[in-house]
Figure (tube, rainbow, N blue to C red):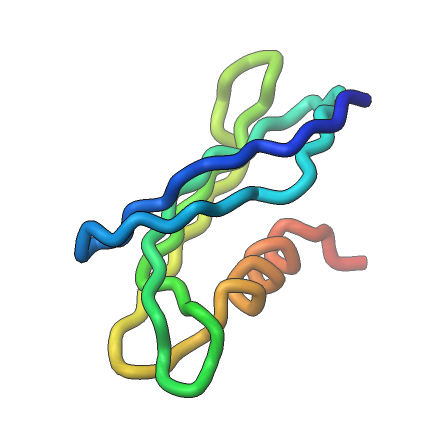
Length: 96
C-alpha cells in the first residue's frame, strides 16, 4: 500500500481560488475503480452541499461500468456532502 498527500488548488464557480487537500490517499490493489465529478456550494447554516454529484464504478480488468449514481439539488439548503456520499455507498453495499 502506498500513501501520500495530494495538495491542490480549487477554483469555485465565481473564480475564487482556495488551497485544498484531499487528505491522505492510500493506493491499494483493487478490482474496481471509482470515477466521479461534482459541484458544491455553501448552504445556509450548514457545511457545503452538493449541487451535483455523479459517479461510476468500473471493473478494472474489463473497463466495464458496473454501477452508476447521480444526485442533484437546488435551493438554499440541502443534503451535506458527507450525507450524499454515505447514501451512495449504502446503495452499493449488498443487502443481506
